[in-house]
Image 1: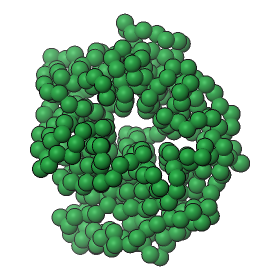
Image 2: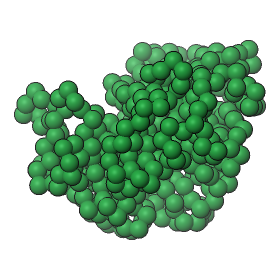
Image 3: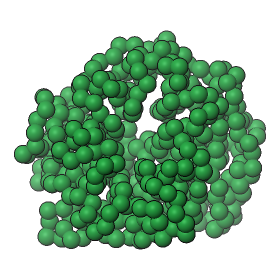
Image 4: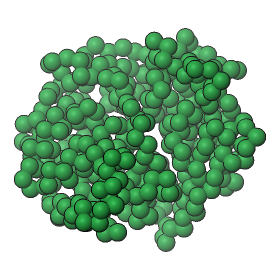
Length: 403
């Protein structure tokens, strides 16, 4: 198959953080302000005429367009597939840059940061912005006011100093460094119930999942995967109660990464994939949540591949997983192992980067903040990859990732 190169849009500016949600791009500036921008309009009108409309939308505003069974018959048509690949290749040759004046045209609002400090981490879920600062966890509304992109009415949810948050299943997973790993229920309507047997209850909505050091957290179905900069990573295994009609999530146990990989390194996980990396190898494992605490528990972690890198990139700093592949951050570069088995190295130190695997429309985005710009990559090769066979990246399942 013809190689599909990633497309990218470069936005110049002095940024600290970014989020994208429901057609809006949120940018935290180093001066303490936050800009909210009409992303779909910005992209589609700025590059109209120079980029094919189908390519532009599927790459940057509707990442779900080309996924799903509805288009499989078209992908099997060699002529259609080649035409689409040619369109992506032509778009790759275009230099897509958004300057301050272009950005200003599509500004919804520019405001003082309502949460007082530059955040350690952020996430947006169900029209709520959740932000971590030194004094704790805060929330406020987005998509709720006509004047501002982010509401000025801020609620403090907890005073624990946290490092990383991710939202799913009407709850927040929270990494607290030396404080451990936590889960906060956001469900006021009983959509999900939780059985936290033998876990410490912090308050009416917060439970301590583990006292082990936790630097980064992500969701592995109803389970949580915790990475650590100072200790080994671990899986906090949960399961669904299949004996009732309730959406009940039950805690099983903590599984250290040494029991999954039998070696040392930095580990991270999301959905059905868990990875462990050191300076020159990366190992991939497939996680099956239903096998934990069953007679087939030995099959819960299936070895997929051991990737030997052709050179050493330095110390592993962090990792992430998207549909399009696996991201490993080293001291001076980002390495992307694509789901079609290609490898891309992005040299240069970064301020922050984000992927959005739970998004409905931006699952192919890779946002990288550098000292003087935000680069938004769009990886589109994964549309053409057999989702059930790939070792690198999350398997796309159309019915998931609703929020």
